[in-house]
Length: 193
Image 1 (cartoon, rainbow, N blue to C red):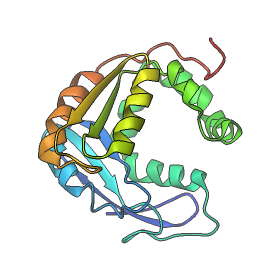
Image 2 (spheres, rainbow, N blue to C red):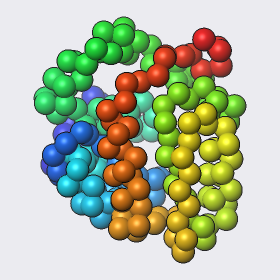
Image 3 (cartoon, helix red, strand yellow):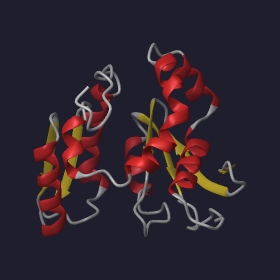
């Protein structure tokens, strides 16, 4: 499937499954194919959106590069009419709508999030790593130490991109109840409130 992002760039994506939405965002070198096996695995329990980030595979690109454009691409690929209707029916929608115009500006002001901001994350977080990748395993442990509600899963024999049949069940188990949890209190990072 293809969608046109806010700046006119064509973004290619796939949608499979039926259930609560899950968006797979590949790394900088991924053209969307790396996550296809995981998308297929999760599709029996979720609606999985997997897209080719701009400048990769069937997605176009528009210079200059900006993080805001990647966010627009996600919005275009993941916001089908049914998903938008469901989100608008949520009790949290009015508050989120009020904050929405400030998010891109706030993100630009904050810049890359420093590690100490992880302590302000109130959502349960699953940190997955493979034990054969020392750097990533160390980074995962450091992140988990800072998150107040982190669950760490280390997979023996797995590297940077563990196979879906290995990590898929862990994601399915974690996301099942996670999508039903109400969000924690909203806090501004670094403000303590």
